[in-house]
Length: 211
Image (tube, rainbow, N blue to C red; front, side, top):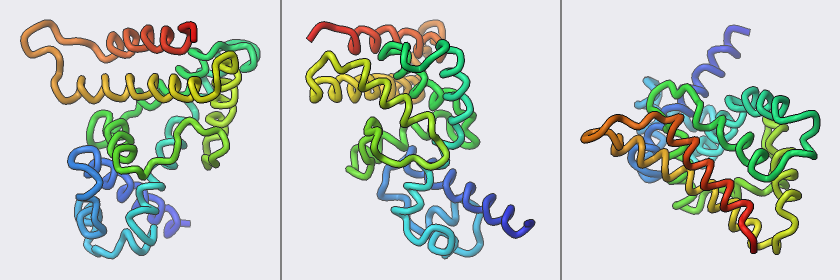
């Protein structure tokens, strides 16, 4: 049992190190050796031992964060109403996305957001809004995606997918800019909650605008 616990701790440390390296400097810096050193591992073959390859490690980062945010998504779903089938597209989108921005990042604020942006830019991120893709440890994601697509069924399918992707990109970029520039050096600091609420208003418009 103790050995299993140590293994899980090591796997998480490697995932966090990879997430931070990619968030700060891009996919190219996440080599087997660099990740192991950043995670404080004396054995630089630790990534190969636990994951097999950098590609599998990066997929494990996504799965880890899905599990980390599952409880918050489930809570938001419960509070959204008696039935998920009754919620609108914006509410489904908000339940799906907002937990990522509430993560208590152990190393770098909102590292996962920038990690996902680098993964997407490198073409290594499968469609995050495809309900058919298995997401271990996060059953709420599939339910929310199905509801989101159903709520946008009045749009042509391709246009609906574009709007969903645009909504996610708007939020990711806003938070990345917030972390990079602060938005408060020459004026009163902007609170993260204020930023999220403001961008969510724009997302609601994107998802509900006439075709």
